Length: 309
View 1 (cartoon, one colour):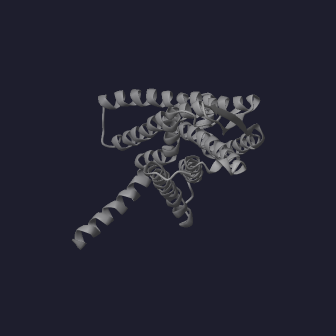
View 2: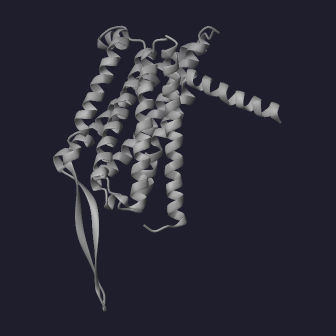
């Protein structure tokens, strides 16, 4: 392992990103768990956000460890640990994608008015159905991640360098994904991306019609509800934009069998590394309860600093 300022910078990025992601996602989980300790039952939305916070905190930890070991080339010695980390990441990423889709669905069913059909049934029963759907999604993600332990393996290729004086041999180790298994995460990632666009489109269309009606006869009593809908839609648009970019990066890594073989792949890997942190920031700033609690802490610290000065 070669010590260099560039390597130190990369490890610092891994450490700082890991800490920020763990802290921000633990904040989401901690705020909701505080309500539980007070005897306040979690709403379906808070339940999803809590699961996303817990999943992202774990995902941020494993991604940071994975990236640090890639940079220091420790995986040349610990192949089995690398494969285990990949399996854990597949499980956590799959859970994150499912939880994000259910969050979009919940917002859509709460914002959009349905008069009949299965959507009305889901709107009336979503609070009861959601815990079961989240459990089924978690089990499905686990069942998808387990076969990866046998479907992803390490191969070693010897590269011979020849010049006028001597020949040298270098071993190149890389990951390989068996083709039958490759299509499973590929299909899931693509399908969930397409499914997430449906509630986004329905919510935007409903909010646009609602705003047109409110312009004609706007009252003070309607304004808070409209602002709540706009806040929820902003979360959905931000998350689906992040979700789309994240799926694109995941697909590029799947086609490369998780091997960082080009300079462009490093940028993709850093985007994935920062994904849990950025997603938590979007959730905190878009959720009135979380953002209000965060602002209270920031204002309290600012007031304390002013008094000390």
